[in-house]
Length: 235
Image (cartoon, one colour):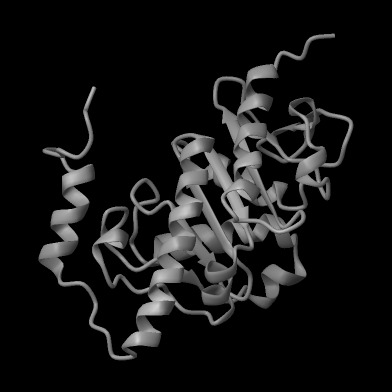
């Protein structure tokens, strides 16, 4: 019987398959999902299945309460985190979680990734935030569900806009990214890892490296994302 979620499963599958190709996951250390807002569901990788064995039809369909709507396998252990982000942030179309090396190292150090250069500013004009380690009451509760609120709390406390900051480090854990589509969330995951690597190397070369000045932050962000953006070929 043909699934009514075929295209959504294919979108999630393609996003997941990009993660090992981009060097963002080792073994099964990661997951990606894609949402269908009209149907109120998202497709996510099944838990613990090697990427080499994945097929589009393996993607598990869940609702925004993380309940399985369609699928024969258990969904990713991070499904509840994805569900919270979809429920609370209505413009998110895809979510990615990895344990990529440099991003995870910064998360384990519980450090924001400083904005040292224009590569970073092309994508966001703030440091990449690192959410504080999870509160004990969150850990004692529904851990994966509360990870979603750990992310949301940090974005809100920093007075950031999730539409402009598509990436975060979860303290002691690893990166999460999101975007208007699953493909954009994967892109943001790759950017997060590369910027994390660049920042690490910058500090090895010069431990006293200066943060990028405001004029350059603004210029590089707005030429790609501002109302008068001129990067690329347009429509």
